[in-house]
Image (tube, rainbow, N blue to C red; front, side):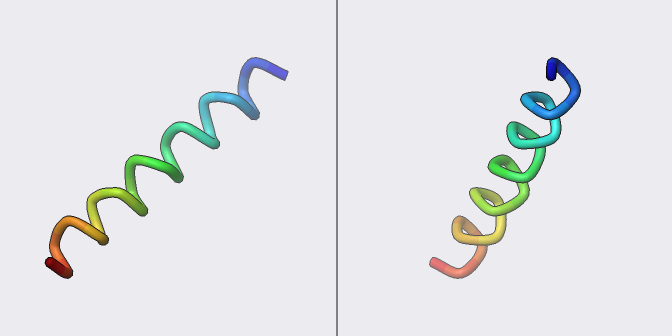
Length: 23
């Protein structure tokens, strides 16, 4: 369960980084 949470955080960071570059 802990690993799933970490994976979601990583995915969120990647998506956030992509959106930041789009602006």
